[in-house]
Length: 124
Image (cartoon, rainbow, N blue to C red; front, side, top):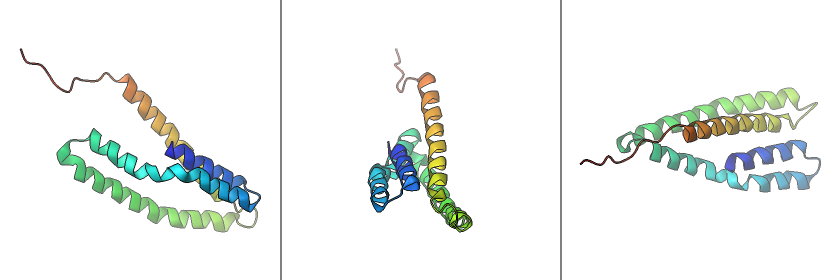
């Protein structure tokens, strides 16, 4: 829901023609704040207890790395398109989020199709 919320807000802001549309796009992104806590909660449940710190440090490293690459990338896109289509960076964001949604759905479907192993084995 958070990814869909973020993507819809980016699309609305990209299509905005008035200030009210910009504010409405901001309202649509209200669920995007749940992404990081939900991801970390899911990761903590999927890994072994002694591996959680390692996984969190790798996730934080990738988040910081993507922010370092994202700022110049979006600046470059905005500088190249601000004369003709200044809203284009919103569509880039929506495209990236759409790709992440598709990947999330593929992972969820693969998870549902894999047989689950019993957590506890009964010894007779």
